[in-house]
Amino acid sequence: MKAVTAAVEALGGKDRILAVRTLTIEGEGENANLGQNLTPDAPLTVWKVTNFKRTIDLGKGLDKARMRVEQVRTAQFPFALATVSRQNMVLDGSVAWNVNEDGNLSSRLTDETALDRRMELLRHPVTILRAALDPGAKLTDFRTMGNRQLLDIASANGDMLTLALDGTTHLPASVGSLTDQPNLGDVAIETSFTDYEDSGGLKLPKHLTTKIEKWVQSDIRVSKYTLNGNAADLAAPAVVSSALPAPANPPVEVTAEKVAPGIWWLAGSGNHRSVAFEFADHLTLFELPESETRAKAVIEKAHSLAFGKPLTEVIVSHAHFDHSAGLRVAVAEGLTIITQSGNVAFFKDLAARKHTIVPDQLAQTIAAQPIKIRPVDDELVLKDASMELHLYHVKDNSHSDTLLMGWSPRDHILVQADLYDSGWLRYPWADNLKKNVELRKLQVEKDVPIHGNIESWADVLKRMQEKR
Image (cartoon, rainbow, N blue to C red; front, side, top):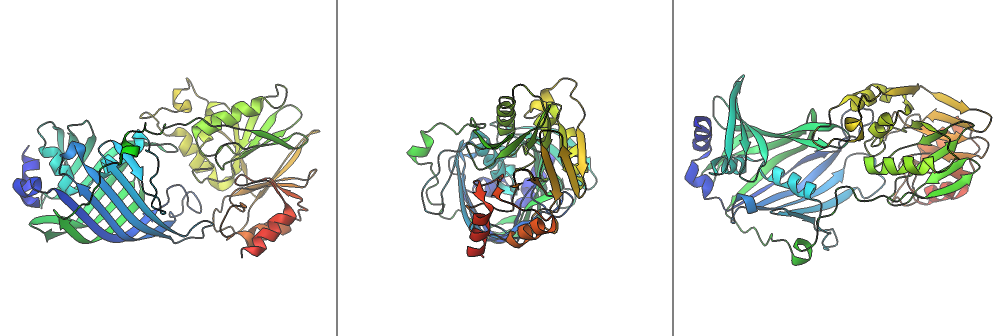
């Protein structure tokens, strides 16, 4: 295809591109936290990235390519865990694993993670043009869009990408592909290439920006390229390569602990919890977090608690993706969503999005009901003869401005998400939690959290004071 030929020549020529055995990219920039913004419309929180280094080994061919991405990330937002993390993420063909900060190897990661990393490897002009030059690749659907020329590439091993070329310089402008994001469904990921400079006989971009739809996920300024340098040994260790890939949807255990009459804390595997409240003729859940798999398991456990009373509604504390992960399951089950008003438009969008790449329960539901939402502005009281539950908007919180907490006045129980967890390293929202409890004049005796363990309020206050 003439467009690819022109791009190859613009980059430095076929011989130079095919002569690349290893490619090392170094620089710094930012990573963003998808689904962790202050409000659904606010900018994403970010990590500052330093010591970024991506090493690609093409010595055994593109289908057996290896890659290591190393970087140091420092949180630029209030964070309760380690604010500096050192990442070391590796790929060998179809095998993905991490090297932990202590130097130990992780277990073999999922096939989905390996695919994501293989697609990341192809998001560079050298590797995408190597894919296009492969005799086993298929190039189709050449088209123009403004000053760009676009074509679809099916690599020799079946990876599907769209390459955009600058109509003037003929250099690669971006590489995009479609993938599944559990909350957003079918999404486009695009890496754009700008600020080309000569490097080792090739023209290479000094600025790499990756977006998931409108959200920037990675923005890297390249300080140095090394062609055909020492890539070290990127082969998967036997203990990793011989293991089965981790399952994409591992089984979830949900336990039920009765914390007061008609109130159960649903915990189990992981560190995401839910709380079930038994009203006179129905059940209400506070939170369906973490994943579709966990949401289904929580709903199943809730159905077993209260002698056949129907589960009719779920409170979603805020819009962060780990807490709203069960939203579409709830919609598929016909449950009413109770959430702070600032989340309503976003939740309607999440419920309406297409999930065709990995169809979830809602996508597979025939004639699925439209989302039913009951918004909470400042306060909502759910009450009948059996149960009373107050929902309050958490004021002035720097983690989420659309956050709800729950209060059982009969039992003096507080239900909160992302305000306190006994396992945290620090408590950036301690003052905010205490302020909101005082604002609502709550006489709390017990904290029943969405993360962490049940504790007395006295112990919560003591621990927050000790780790100030």
